[in-house]
Image 1 (cartoon, helix red, strand yellow):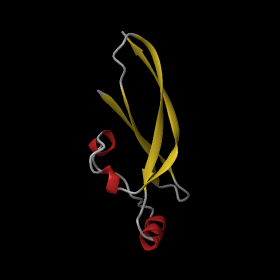
Image 2: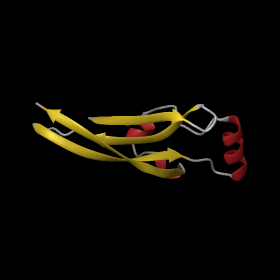
Image 3: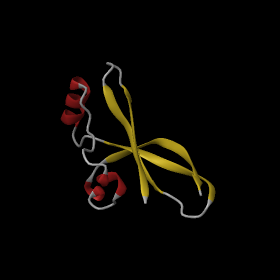
Image 4: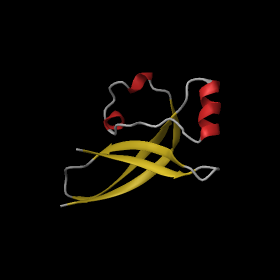
Length: 92
């Protein structure tokens, strides 16, 4: 099993935009586990698309969370690294 994380926040104009996506496998062994998730954001492919998305406030985002969890098809998607999120698991 995996946990998919989608982080949203306001941009300069107050629109809710994606700040990052990430995924991590849930540990099976009992105990307390800490995992660090590398976050990434999809990017526009051309300068015109970048300007249009900035101007309209609609930035590229994934519609299906399975894209984040699976590596299949992501090699053709342009993304930018966007920091890290630390998550703790208490497995019984």
